[in-house]
Image (cartoon, rainbow, N blue to C red):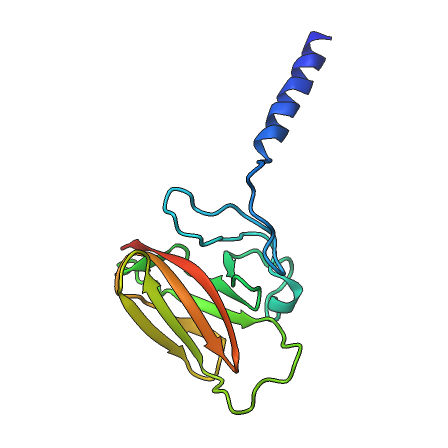
Length: 168
């Protein structure tokens, strides 16, 4: 009886550790994860399955680090995790940008190129990167380590997200 009571207590403690009252709302099209409280960066790096609309080309239960845009219009699949400023390991900061399928016809006059306007948190430091042809595979290097706030624009659509770059 004593060990049964102990098992129930351990189970209750473990379950309590898995839930929090301050858990953020689930992003559109994704599963919520907690933000990085230590850094103040709102980047939510998800490691669960990619949503169905973003897993084309992946096999099985694709589990790779990814970040959803704030509106759920795009997901950044992080082949390099963590993203790193001044990489010395020979890897690249490869990101696959996958847009949610559009519910309306895109603006035919809007450029398809994915334009990324990145601003370093707490500064006026900005960088602009482009992915020709629209969302897809890219190597995105930013000028210094830190939390970068990204505004993503393509085909008349926009979304935002934060990505953290570690020091290399």
